[in-house]
Length: 437
Image 1 (cartoon, rainbow, N blue to C red):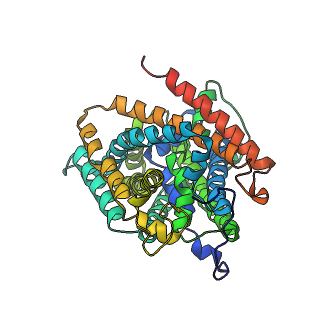
Image 2 (image 1 turned 120 degrees about the horizontal axis):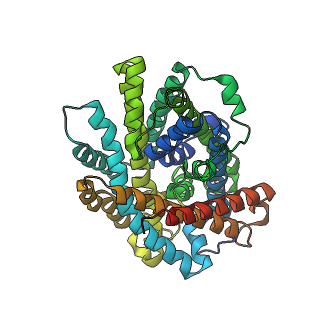
Image 3 (image 1 turned 45 degrees about the vertical axis):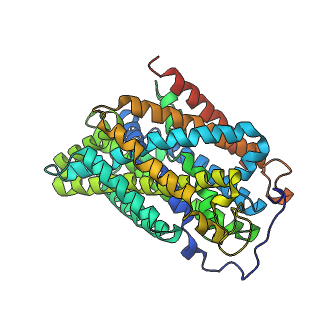
């Protein structure tokens, strides 16, 4: 394996000038991170506190910009993968990831399928059950990733982002937001009893293991070497600006529809069905159904993104142990995770497809739980355990000699990564304390 500190410049033509047309990996990671649970959390923020936590939603998006940028910068600056970096930290980092990715995948598989099944069951009340719709969603996600490569996955995700954005922002405009109150909400304020909830809103929206997959999607796009750094940063900022507008729009829906009417949402993803019922009462079934379509787009885009991105992470892990697991496809080092040709080979490798099957079929058994409260709690705790690991290891790696000097962290990156790492540690401790011991 090449030295981590060595920078590889890709040979070939210059970066195209029409950069806006190349945007894609950022939309994939942002859409994957914003799922049904994030929509509920943001709607509840609006329901409980009106517009006062707009600033927290915006700050949360800025933190995700910093994390995704750090991940992409590592891949482009060092010519190696994030897992290469974790390996240099010692066996503890590799072991932590190995246990986490297996357990998390099993729990998320059921959570993602269930979240996708809920809006479909509501759209077709005379049709199959939530469980059946969830299974069908998992199988469709498996087919989308199994038979296609990154380029097609990106197009699918971009389409889902468009649906999510148009539906949620359109409904937010229709409910007539209070613009002065929305603007005032950008000023940091903590209403009584909102501290831990605010921290969860900052840290939770858009924050999953798929942030670590951003560098792999950057490579799959064909961006290798530091000359792609400006493109990666533009891609990342545009994606999370879109996400920020989307999240604020959902908060507006919560504030205008629920806070003013003093309506409390149900816990979990089912809370979005309550939003649909309120929309139907106020605007009619067409608007409610449109919202459910946006709900499905958010949920199913997360399924596709996880099925693809986390499978790439798992494949990189396996390749470090068994380099022969991925063929070179025409020469080269099979452990080289920064070659686009190698990335395409990984999408056809047995580790990639084995993890796809792990995400899809074993978790289906959890869908038979009538009220999977334990599943929801477990998923929340598992998510809380990965984000501090990602933030703090990136802080460590990007301030070390493993990275060429010009691409190491500056003061802003250090503050954002350190702050987010501490935030995620607090949330992790709180999740553990909230467990029904």
